[in-house]
Structure formats: C-alpha cells, structure tokens
Length: 322
Image 1 (cartoon, rainbow, N blue to C red):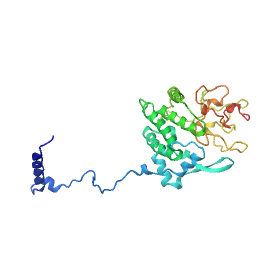
Image 2 (tube, rainbow, N blue to C red):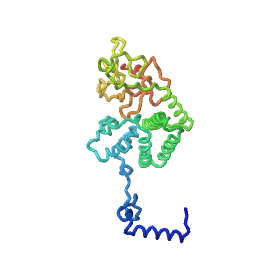
Image 3 (cartoon, rainbow, N blue to C red):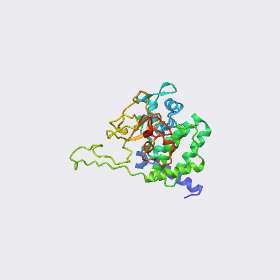
C-alpha cells in the first residue's frame, strides 16, 4: 500500500520515536541484523566449486585421444583432482609405440550412475572446458547438444535415455575423428536409444533379507540362461567358459582380471561392472556382436568391435585365435 508523502514522514517519525523510547522493550533489547549485507564495500563470496580449475590430467586424457567421462567434471571429482593430487591414480598404457601415463577414470563413479542434478552441473563445467580445448565452434555444437537434451519433455522421467544417449554420442565422437550425424540421424539415434532403454529388462532386485536363505548367495551356483550377457562363449570340448576378453578358459569375462593377452600384448577390452568396455576410454562394446550364433540387431555400429582385438570386421567368436 502506498502512502502520501506527508503520511509516510509521519509514520517514519512515529517508528523512530518508538525505537528510541526507554519504555520500548522490543527495539531497545533485541538486536536484529540484516540477513544480507548489502554494503557496496562488502566482499563477494562464491562457492569454490564454481571456480575449481580443470586439471591437466583431464587435458592429457583428451589429448591422448581417450574418452573423457562427464563424471570428471563433477564438483567432487574436480575437488579431488585439485586438492588431493596424491590420492589420484594414473595408469600406464601403450600408445603409438611408447608408454604413457593417463588418468585412471575407474576411480571415479561411472557415468551411467549419474543423477540429473550432478549431470546438469557437470555439463556446465564440461561446456566451458570444451570451449577452451576445442574452440568456440565445438563449444557451440556441444551446447546445442546439451540444450536439446535438457529441453526434452518429461526430463526426469526420460533421464535414463538422455544419459545413455549422451554417453553414446560423446564416446563415439571421442573414438572416431570422422564421426558425424546429420540432424535426422541424430534424432533417430535418440529414438533408437529410447526404445532400447525402454525394452531393457529391469535390474534384478537384491533382497536384503537373508534370513530365508540357508546359505550365502553365490552368483554362479545356477546355470545362466542362454543369451545372457553374463555368458562368455563356451569351449565346446570341455564345456567350460572361455573369456571373450583374454581368450583364456576357466572364467567368464565378467570376472576377468588379466592385464595382457597370452602373448603379452595389451588387452583391448576390460570388464567394468559386468559390462564390456574399451580399456582406453571405457566406452561400451556390444556383447552380442561377439557371438556368431546371436547377431546383434541394435543400431550402434560404434559398439560393434571385437572384444579381443578391436576389429570392426568380426566379433570374438570369429577372431583367428578364438
């Protein structure tokens, strides 16, 4: 409500007299401070997470041609890289005839477990980093990609699809310098991803109540159904599993701990949370592409690589040493 100037002055005078009155118990005894300091000379504080620099280890990972997971741009990851350098692990990889040390991304949470708020916050750092690393054109392109995803209707409900599509596009762009999608191909790829996520079977719930079981749960005490991604292709002679990563018999790929092939060369693939991923950049590799009798019909050619050697011409079952 607005008051005439004369009435406003009278009201201000009345309040001032009431504050200074010795009989006033409220204004004379209670000291109230402003919730914010609006002084022009007051220092301005910002959360340190907004100004955490991008670690050189991230730049080196990108310069070496490896996929850079979005989780490296979360507040926790940037804080660890900046303030806990002794706790950061690196791994040695063989590239272009020499051994180099790069950031071990497995020490950070996997991208597929990101939550919407963390994903959105990390993308803000990621866009600024892309602009510094690759220039304004690349920054504009990835900004459009980010804007497309954030504007999808029912964002939270469809976030699993958004996250999977985002990981696929970024990993494909990192692993293939010639990767390119037209606008139509880009949107179709998103739709195929959405269908794949919707058709994927839900993860089995693990009951925390163990009182009804007479023994401890063993993940291999039952025969796994045919076609399950936990099955490595079988050795017909001994009916024992042969690992599709290292080609050694006696274990499944999901429990493979080998670092090199039998002849000593660096392995192309590793198991990460029970999934096949490239060892150099953690991008996913199609399991069904490795099987001769169960060809994959999904549209993700960037994942159709031999888990043994990385060839696009065949899967592990048709590898010459298999």
